Amino acid sequence: MADGTHSPDEHPVRFDLLTANPVYKPFRYPWAYDAWLTQQRVHWLPEEVPLADDVKDWQKNLTPAERNLLTQIFRFFTQADVEVNNCYMKQYAQVFKPTEVLMMLSAFSNIETVHIAAYSHLLDTVGMPEIEYTA
Image 1: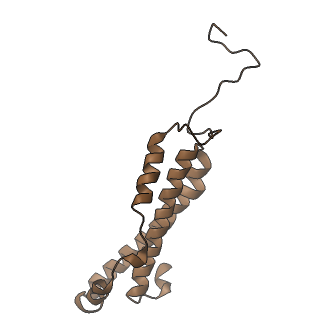
Image 2 (image 1 turned 180 degrees about the vertical axis):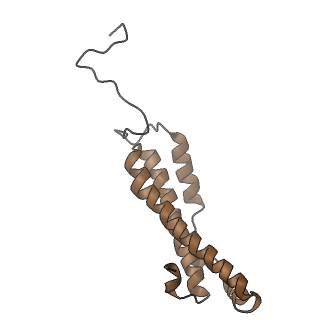
Image 3 (image 1 turned 60 degrees about the vertical axis):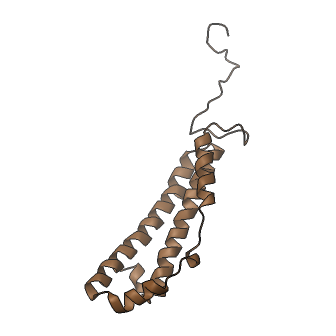
């Protein structure tokens, strides 16, 4: 209506982070798509990182106190990334609805899974038992 009010038959279209996109484009949040694209371009896998020198250092150059400190740090980082991934998947993705925002969140979640696998790969490579994950 000309006075800025809506008739009972009209429904204003909401465009916010809590409303899903009816179509893929146009993006409402192009920065979210850009973040998704940037994350995709820096993807890596744990097996791509050489660990031979780290294993040697772990076995021959670290004191027991240093190994203990690193064990605590690796445990924390692994579990922290599990929690961060859960937050992206079980919390944020349930709230935010635009497609490009969900793409961004899923890319961030995916890289958290890479981090989890990478820390685990390091722990396995230096010979830590799986009990360390629950200690």
